[in-house]
Amino acid sequence: MMKARFIALSLLLIAAVSAATLYAWPQLPEVVAVHWNYHGEADGYAPRAVLWLLGPGLMAFMLLMALMLPGLSPRRFEVEPFAPTFYYSFLVVQGLLAYVHGLVLASAVGMAVPISRAVPAGLLVMLVLAGNPMGKLRRNFYLGIRTPWTLASERVWYATHRLAGRLMVGSGLLGLVALALGAPGWLLSVLALAWVPLVILYSLLQYKRLDKNQVEMH
Image 1 (cartoon, rainbow, N blue to C red):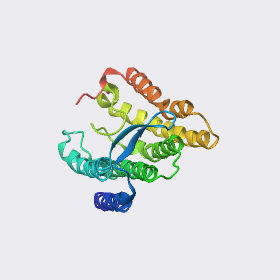
Image 2: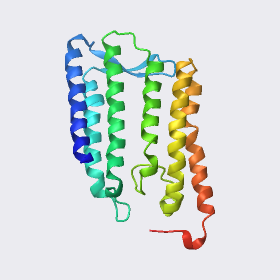
Image 3: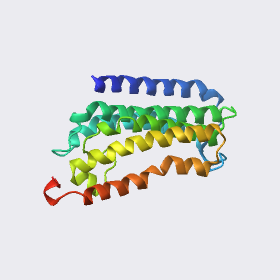
Image 4: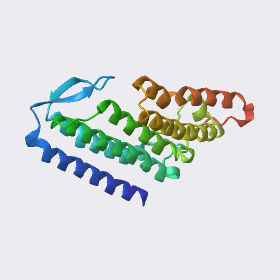
């Protein structure tokens, strides 16, 4: 059921982004900004046709990947046991891609878009949405905290992802508050990424605590 909803919602987002691009097309300059620096200043440009690849094209590729990867999973690392969370995670990414494409289009047609604030806001919201179901992920090779220690032990995987989910949601919410208070970009980056080394170290420590007969190598 979730797979069908994922396909339907992804196609709807791709159609919406395509329609928005087509609507804005006559107003777009021949060369548009496609990259911004740390201060929100445009520093990368491309022909406007590239927008079809960066928006609808990339989203269609993500849809295709989400449909192909489950069938490529090795035995004992299948996606099926957590399929709703798998497709939900890809849908969150699709939503972020659609959001960023909307910002790029708005900027290209001359609207005053605060890129340095709008893009971090989208990433922080994605962090909250992606972190919420982290505890439901099962061992796999596509999503989650895939360290040597989480892949070697189911117990370490569960413990690490429960912590990661809490830290991701907390980091995202704290980052949104900081963004609203006008925090600089470097601080937002720290808040958004500080949880990563913590959960990697945590996975190692959890693995070291296991007895030899508790380590499941598959």
